[in-house]
Length: 150
Image 1 (cartoon, rainbow, N blue to C red):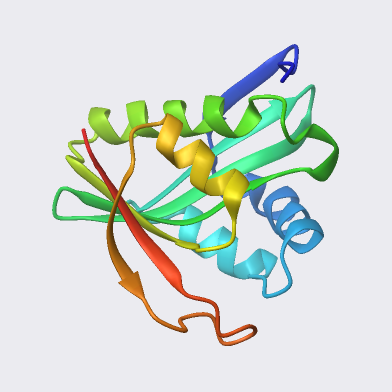
Image 2 (image 1 turned 30 degrees about the vertical axis):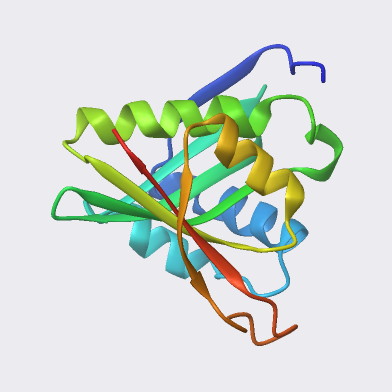
């Protein structure tokens, strides 16, 4: 695994909504639109960390935060930059941000068959704590519930 050079990590703001929506559309089938991201990025309960190469958004993590907990909604990395430590670097930055704002527990769900994501989360200290049978409507695949205490 190589590492991407000149990777800048920062909290995303409403002005990043167009780039965030475009990257989400390139990575996922069921996507949020630019207006939704614009609205969410202006809310204190929504956490978003982005990875930039130059001025181009190449990865992001989004989450909701409430009561000392955060739930990761999505983690995405541009296809051509996968397996180059972008996801792990972003996730560690996101966890640092969570600590700074008083989050003590982070949870997420992930498809049982998503081996790269499961490996990433394990490397970053997440543990499986539950299972949602046939959670994903598109495939009937199970979701594993993972958590990490900070």
